[in-house]
Length: 312
Image (cartoon, rainbow, N blue to C red; front, side, top):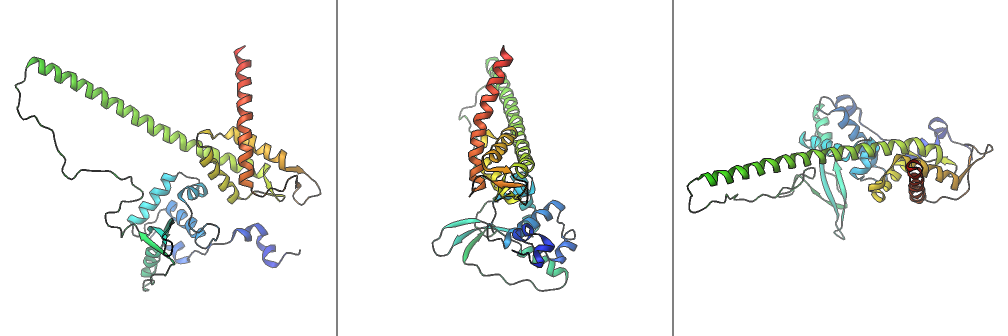
């Protein structure tokens, strides 16, 4: 099949992924609206999903994967843009079956702010077949970026009805209690520090895993003779994070990528990309999941044999 003019200019893969329209007024004035550079990248990422039929309402995990950051960073950007009055978030509910759907992001406040810069009127509220419960309209609603903290309306302090006279024995007991309190506080502080450190280590591991996927998959994993796309890589990353949360390993990913190639692909100089398929892979993500499961077993055996050799 002959390529049309657009395919010649942009390439088939670029056209398949689509394009995003971003107003020049936003590109040229986002700093005037106090939008940080990272926040602007987040806005562009969200806009790229707005008219994407595959996933118009992406999860925070998918956004984090595309932006190579943590989910906490996504929460920070959302909270900052909401505070600046440039973003609204809500939950979608189908007006027919009342089922809740994904989180929805509205940039109407941002567009209204841009229009005010040039003296235009605000945009009308768009109609939607889904009922949207906006977070800033919920009565008593909590910020979705912040955990809910339960508080009593009337905090109470326990007091004895009959005050007692301090004695040496009492003082000694108080000192013991004080020492126990100091020790408990120190333990809690150490536990909190350890918890924060564990979170940072987990985020660093996830980043390393994602970087390994971006390196290994294009070299070893193919679909219909073509390397897997960035979208496929992100889907595989989300699958691994969900199915193998405590068993993520860059080394295992390298093994899994090699297994994928050995089972499904082979070198063919006559093929357009030099690669042909042994198997008709219908779901690259599902196929990689099976490869990763077998790679884990192979990694454990190799590690066990290595430990035996070192022990002798």
